[in-house]
Image (cartoon, rainbow, N blue to C red; front, side):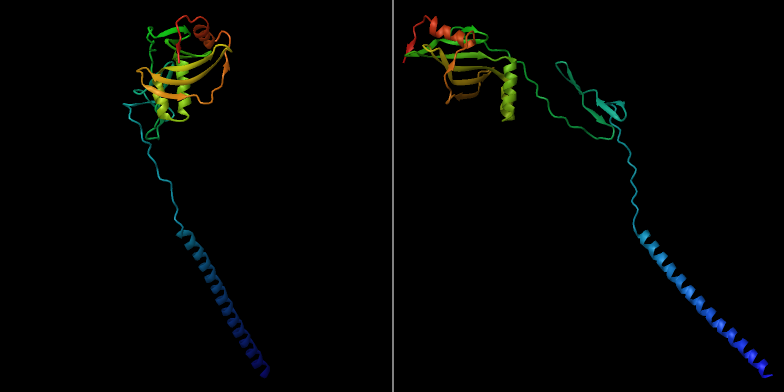
Length: 245
């Protein structure tokens, strides 16, 4: 009888102990599950808090068909604003997605009609060169004479480019560059020359620039050159009486 009672008691305690252990394990699993859910939810909340920015849809602005004619691949050109210079055409195209295109202004060199000097004062001697036949001065073997040179288109363009490096305003003035006068000095005995002074003029006789050559040196006169022709005029074959200082 006692053995039966002890057996029942042992079974009772065993069942009770297993029940208690089972409850504790369930609580631990639930707590771990709860923590996992909190971590997952916390991560989800962090992800959801970052805004997602989507690129807006842009509707292309189609150019005015009255002005711009379609070329292809979203390109247009202004059929009413085509500039022609010599054999060149300037066309200002734009892309279909652009609102406007600005182009740099083109400065065209105007046509300048050379101004022929007064033949009563200036005598022609070589390749658009003249000299003042009535104003030649002599001191010892040194002769001074004023010359007049009509500039060519090439000279005008070179001078425009040269002036443009220093001043755009100056280069614009030289669009009408027509001629220059210079004071040439000759050493007739040694056949040498140098330039003392020069003045640039436009086609309306306005002075563009003037300057004096301070550190110029005597130069040999090259045979058959322009200055050689002038040397013959003023030093060798000049028959008019020279003005003495």
